[in-house]
Amino acid sequence: MNCFNKSDRFHPPAWRLAVAGLAVLLGGCATGPQPERAARFVFFPPPPEPPRVQYLTSINEGQDPEAVSGKLATFIVGGQISALPIVKPYGLAVASNQLVVCDTGAHALDILDLEQLTMRQFASGGNSKLGVPVNLAIDADGSRYVTDTGRNQVLHFGADDQLLNVLDGAVFGTNAQRFTGIALTPDRIYATDINGHCVRVFDKQTRAPRFTIPHNPLAEEAEEPGRLYMPVNLALDGYGRVYVSDLAACRVKVFDAEGKFLRAFGSQGDMPGQFARPKGIAVDLKGRVFVVDAGSQTCQIFDPEGRLLLYFGAPDSGGPDGAGTLGLPAAVCVDYENLARFQKYAAPGFILEELILISNQFGPHKISVFGLGTKE
Image (cartoon, rainbow, N blue to C red):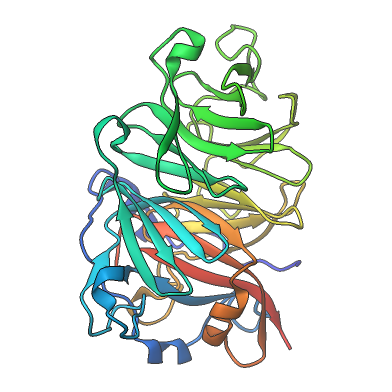
């Protein structure tokens, strides 16, 4: 993959207006494209460059499993059966045939079954009631770790929706933490702490804190380039490296599995390769890094060394009704398991290699689904 959009800037002034309106994040039921609109293909980069990313469709709602009654349901708005809306999505994760969305507007998890085409909302109650679920990670056993900024905790739910454990400031002697991002390894939990200016690493079995990234986040000597100012999201690659989107620094910072600083990329600005409000981040199996920016309203793809490859989703770059553009994107994830389910939305001869799912907190397309691939 060696191409990128050649425009000099991210289509100002449209994205600057979006930055000014960040406080007005509209929720509510959205409408998405009709199925026949899939014929109006939107590619990035635009011609004459070879296409590498295609906008496929959006997911805005799902049918209540109890209301389907044997009828064919659809995620695409336009179906005849009443559906549950995705209100204001933030974090998202895919595991097998399930897409799970942290719906900050509904104060719930939206759990979408990609095979049965249904959706249920999980909010729990009592001591396990969700406040403001922001991000989540799904473990190999199907359990879900959810960062909740309403409770300032990490909540661990089993695959059966039962609350198993809670991580909060008690384990390190403070209640001033504000967990946002979350990632897992077989033996560790990584959670970004905005107030602590660090990533906190916990033992998955004992829940005991192991160390922070950086190791002395509040020390005077903890200066750039490895200092974290406002770490909002993180992702892990296949080598255990930790990629952190630092919103205040307008950079992505990379550490090894033990917290040693390796490198950073990006800077503040509106040029390709720069950031205004970097939020969600993901790493694919080839080490490519995907970063969504709520300021420029783009998703940028970088190689493992932080060199820009491509960006997409900018205002005025899509198709009818804004198809293919992003609206205050918050999170991104990469999926390989559901390629066959979404290949039908691809243009003839465009072969999907991986899916890119992006949550939008503004506009008609709540979860935008893109495909990274090649044209035969």
